[in-house]
Image 1 (cartoon, helix red, strand yellow):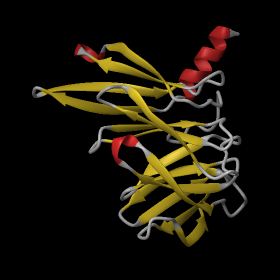
Image 2 (cartoon, helix red, strand yellow):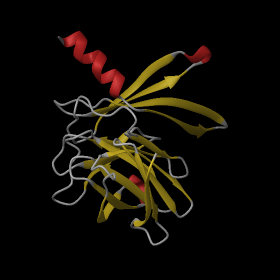
Image 3 (cartoon, helix red, strand yellow):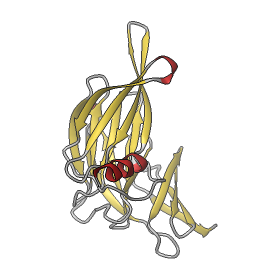
Length: 207
């Protein structure tokens, strides 16, 4: 059972690549959201010659993982300009996002959405916009808007209801300028205007 569980966690872990610069040398990492129900962690692996991976750190996120969910959700996201890595804690209630400082591989903090936000359905996906992080809480059917702060910290701002035309939960999100596009598990998609920060509905359609 332990072996099967480990395989499941690896499958659902979202992987992000990040870089750190020191003395003109670039260190590349693979970072996983381990989605551990007994206490979530993010694991850092240094990418070496020939693609070999060496584990460098296991960082407790201060939250709890779901141990499953929808594979398309982005549960790790990287803000390269500030050296920040964000990890979702999919079983926290309310749901949380953890900020990790890449250079030190240490936790900056764990930041909750509103009291009703949770990812108990398919987990919590993320997307980065201009000065904002958007977290799709699939259990509550909401998109939480967080302000990006210095030191890889976040401040929750507001929630926006988000569900597909057939009531489906959020599958994935992507930003492009002032537009946030959301895909739902029922096959519908929706666009939002994020020029003012919080998403404002523009149009929904079926695929």
